[in-house]
Image (cartoon, rainbow, N blue to C red):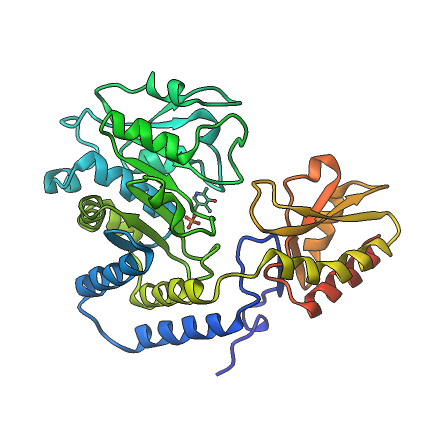
Length: 362
Ligand SMILES: *Cc1c(COP(=O)(O)O)cnc(C)c1O
């Protein structure tokens, strides 16, 4: 059997958008595949697999407990449902019941973003009602506090480059508000690199996406306090069933987390080194002006920022996607005539292909 792009009439994809980072530590990917394969080839007592991998990860991540879920989005929905239901089986069977009034999920207005799906959709799926604190350009701890009512079920904090960055309370400040009013704090850290920081800062539940910074398979991870994680697990009897994750990916994610803690991710210095010749080559192309920029949220990530001089950046982005291989870039700055290349999942050969294609387009 051979599997290929051709078999299904698919295009090869070069991922310079940065959502999935598979480069740098190829050994890790190999380990993850091995773990997935073991999962695929064996049977397990599924509830044991779930709780034991959770306990294993909790120990590594220095939290009370952990639960692997199918995605960070599923993690948000199930965490919200868990906290609203407080471990009630009746609630798991009737997640949207009128009998439970305490459903408000408080989040800074500038965190109510669309990461591909609006945060609000996942909160609603979990039976929560979004209440926004602060304004579009900022939220202080005081603004958060003034929105708390007897129906506040949890505070939700989205730690992400998608959110408004300025004039926002920190995770620790949100944790202090949560503590003062005795409501749990959920942090969505889906794409973040640091697997310790937010639980150490006082979050009760922290949610990660398996296939982003962790470089694992399609999955999600919820870590935090034992009681809440048990409630998250209970959602498997309710809405969680529609978000089931397979044994292959449970084992794959566990391995990916372990490898990541051992090897770390590609450093900013390594990215800068790999970017330098790429940027030089980009600057040889007429009509492009390339520079190196650091991640907008201040992470140790560097990218090529390319100003398109005489034509529309959107047209160039479309042309990059049109051929085979299809080249995907970061498009957030396209309105300003800028295309960004995130090279975490791009190797040297692929960089050459990008340069060749840009020369054709320009
Ligand atoms: C990507 C992302 C998610 C969703 O992650 P999935 O695992 O794809 O569901 C949630 N929140 C933020 C901030 C994200 O960036």
